Image 1 (cartoon, rainbow, N blue to C red):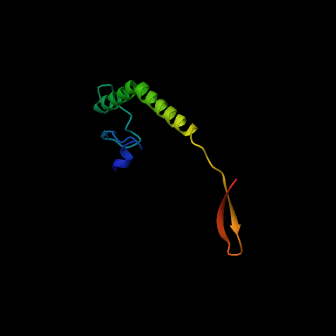
Image 2: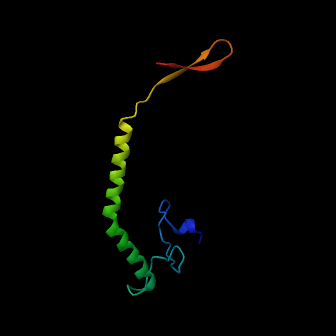
Image 3: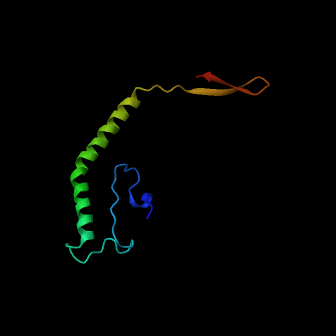
Length: 93
């Protein structure tokens, strides 16, 4: 399977985990002792434990971005044709 199909997009530090099954059967396990079940459930438990910190960090980043963009002043510029040569010229509004 290609790496791009095995890892969630945007998860640069993701670790691909091999599961010897096709897409239909890769989450169907005979029991909790099944090696595939132990792999999948272990990774899901780690994700669940790390989720509150990861989500909090994303919210903090969004707040920093939002606060940074509030101070940006946007200038509105109207573009007009100048003279007969059709050169476009900016004009402050």
